[in-house]
Image (cartoon, rainbow over all chains, first blue to last red; front, side, top):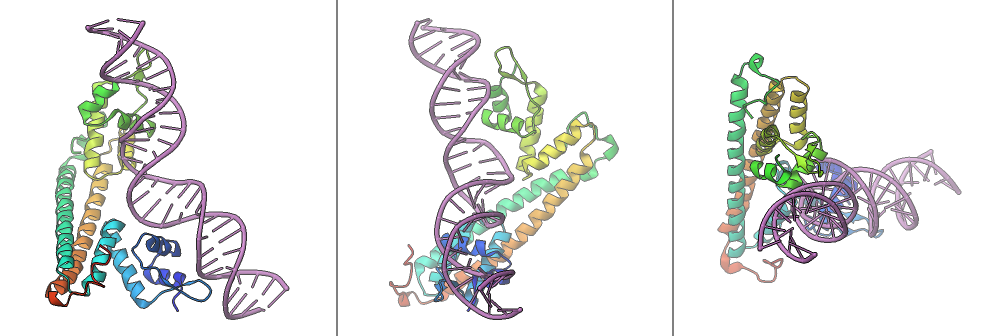
Length: 130
Length: 130
DNA sequence: GAGCGCCTTCCCCTACAGTGGGAGGTCAAT
DNA sequence: ATTGACCTCCCACTGTAGGGGAAGGCGCTC
């Protein structure tokens, strides 16, 4: 028996977050013990780790939910699921490309800022490198 | 006399956004004409451009406000901006790394789905969420 | 003098990802 | 038997970056 606080702590989250994830379809409705407490398994903790990693990468919960639902279905062979996962991969690639482009822009700003003479920076005008 | 709509259009924003920026300390309270309309100067449009570029670099309004307040206080914000950009860059690098790792995980799911036998597809289990 | 387009303030609404707190139930230990 | 930790549900609230639309004022034109 793994209670909600225990599962939350194992995943580095709060109980509130787990209830929120269940409510929003990222976690299946947990089994309940006789007294109504949620009872989790080790698999749930893996799932929470995946969610945490997705969040850390900046994915929205809706995106993570999509991937998890596909993965849940992906245990069985289904061309439709395969295509949907391929779509998710393409989406992730697009998101990575967007971030890489933003990084290049910010790197340009930063390079100019790093090369600039701090003494030449004039408070009267806005820094020209942003 | 530059009215709010004109200034907004020049900066590629809406009037709502300008009032919001004023309310949140990114723009000083504008001078008013006799009828109470906000009256902006060319300097305001420069400031709006700066805000827009900061947003495009992924800075939060609170960060941009800090930069602008430093400048308004007569202190050259250059080193501060450089540090913010360096932090932004590090954050983007971390986010990209997480996303790339996650992509690899999803690619694994996809490989499993692609390797599975399509004939074994069970309509009761698969894609039931669709 | 009516209409149009812009402006003003005001308040509410959105999505996201939760957090906080209250009322009440449960469980193990003291 | 009572404390403290944990659990249940539910309602409200946070912060971000504004958007929607009402109710009314100003200026110009037809």
